[in-house]
Image (cartoon, rainbow, N blue to C red):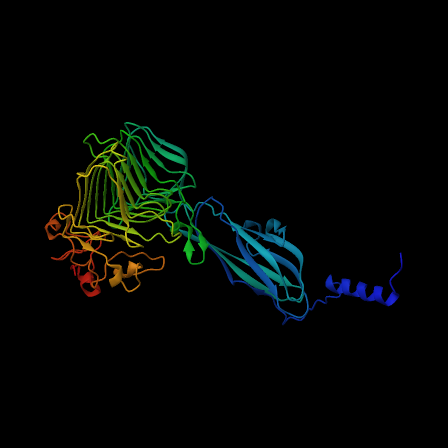
Length: 483
């Protein structure tokens, strides 16, 4: 084979060496410093003893020469609760030595933390510093911050006799919570249940979830960190399974309960034998990956409750008997356009007859021109919409649609984007109607004696708003007077 000329081989060799950084120079000038993607690595409020997700810190050298780092250490040393990996090297005992960052290059730092139990009922903040000691003698720091709260860690919880859970700290539940037949699980004001992925509440007995306005019962997933800077995992759907009430379970109550971010919300499987399967009042079911509230052949009463933003349907009723009073069914699920309806009624080809489906002083709305659908074979099915605000096709059935107002997309500034009826938007869903909306004053005033306040305890005025929220002017809200 013919050899390359000497000068060609030399040029290629030099080019290779330069490309490999063999001629990179390293400065010891104290003014040459590193820069960081953030000055503080922060962790959301964690659960004590449970490891965090991994945070990433980028370390940049924007100088024209390389920088050598004599050591990178945790200020708290081996006693630190933080764990750090720098460019693939774990800082054993909180210390690592001899790192290089070439000119115009960077290295990657991974940080995790596991917090000990604090023995208190409040979240406790822990701090440390990650210290970069340069060969030049310059030291730079990145702050590490994490908050943690203690919790009861429960695996495979079975309730076989009447039980009331503690309220001093949340429960983190693995392998689901099962309420067996004949047992009652009571959830007092301030109880928080945080379910791990694929876990949920399965009810054969009875659940009495009875919070208060100031201390609601909270049912949610156990992820406390962020998916993105602007979006917490707790504000995304399908973080846990949801609540399933099986056939034979009656007398369940969910008052002042906040259930969110499940694969489904509350699913009731119970043939209607005259007993009420579930009562829901002053509650919220929100941000659900499937159906938010689903019944099959059940008797259910729902009042002063928000059921919103479901990948499936907000409410799906198959047969049975239901009454919804002053409820807001709002289908603004943001993560896909392929979402279900706000309300779906069905008798499954007559197999599950609808005995009653009454919606009184409700708001039923969402994206699109029609968010109320059904598959009912019985033309005499007893369903009723009275004093409601509906986003659906105008009906000429004056016996089933009484004093109803319809959302007209032509009158909506953004066409089918009819969220303009409410107070806020952009991942903050406040379904309080604006005073300029036709929802204002649309409710039946004869219900005031039974429902004088809205879901948030605000007084309704003499011309109450439809749905579970009453608009109250700020100056009168402070005085406790409805507006």
